[in-house]
Length: 433
Image (cartoon, rainbow, N blue to C red; front, side, top):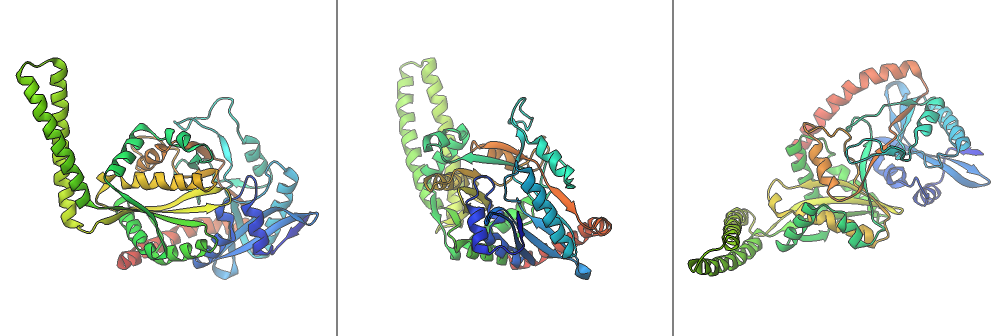
C-alpha cells in the first residue's frame, strides 16, 4: 500500500462520490473549497493499492498561533471500515502527516451506525451494531468524544434518513397522518413551490436570520451562503427550494368555502325544524365548528393580505445532492404565515425531487437523542420525525492526538476564545440584517 499526500482533486472527487458506502458531501472537494472561505485549508490524502485508490480523506487544517494546527476529516475517512489493514495503515500515515505539520491532533466522525434504535432512541435487542469498530478505533489510539445526545460535537450524532429509492406512494405513506393533512392544506391554500437561483440566496438568508433570532441559534453570515451556493452549483449539487404564500388568494378560497358551509347550514337547520335526530344534531354542531374556524381563518389571512398584498416567500430550504445521497442542509422560515403549512409542502417537494432524480438515501442532517419533554430541541426532532425516516445513531467523534501537552492547553483555552468570536459574529450579522 502507498500513502498519497496530494491526491488530484478530480481523482479524489471521483473516488469519494462513487464510494459504495461512505460517499459524503462533507468529504467532497466542493466542501473543501467552501471551507477555504472559513480559513481552513483542505488536504487530499489517500491510499493506493495496485495503482488504485482504496482510501481517501479530506483533512481540513485550522491554523493556530505559533505555527501549530489541528485537522478534521468531516464524516471521514472514506474507506471500508471492515478492512482492519487499510484502517490501521491510513490512521498511522495520517497521524505522521499531521505531526510533521505541527498538528496537535486530527479528528474523524464517520457516519456509521452505532446500533439500530427504536423511536425512543433505545437500542434494538439483537439488532446490528458496530461496537467492534468503536473498540478498534480506541485500540488504534483514538479518543472517543462520547455518546452525546444533542449537538455538542462537530456533526450531529443522530439523524433521520429517508429511503428515497422506494416507490413514491410508499415514501409518502410513511409520512405521519398530521403531516399529510398539513401538506394537503398547503396545497388547498395554493402555496407556490419553486426551485430558486443564486438571486434567491438573499431571500433565503433573510429567512435564516429570522429563524436564528426566533430560536436563538447560530448560523453563518450571508457571504458564506453565497459562496456555498456558488461552489456546489458548479457540479449541480445544490438546490434551493422556496415556498411562497399569497394571502389574498387564500382569503378568496376561505370565502368560497365559508359560503358553501353557510348554505349547508341553512339546509340542515331547515331539516331540523321538522324534527331533529341525534345524527342531525351532530352534523349541525360539526358544521358550526367548521364555520367558526373558517371565520377565524378569514380574519387571520385578511390581516396577512393587508400586510403582504403581493404575497411573500415564507420558507427556503437548501438541499445538497452528492453521489446517490441527499441532505436537507439549511432551512429558514418566516415569522408569519406558519398557518399556511408551506414548510411542510416544500419539504415534501424536495423529498419527491430526490426520489425522481435517483437519490437512494435522503438525510435530514441532524436531530437529538435526548427526547425529554423539556429539551428545547425536541420540536426540531418531532418535525423531522413526521416524514418517516429511519432514526439513526452514529458512533460519534474520535480524536487522534499527535501532541499531547499542547492538545491539553488547546482544549482548555480555545473554547473560551470561540465563545468570544461567536459573540462578535452575532453582532456583525445583526448589523447586516
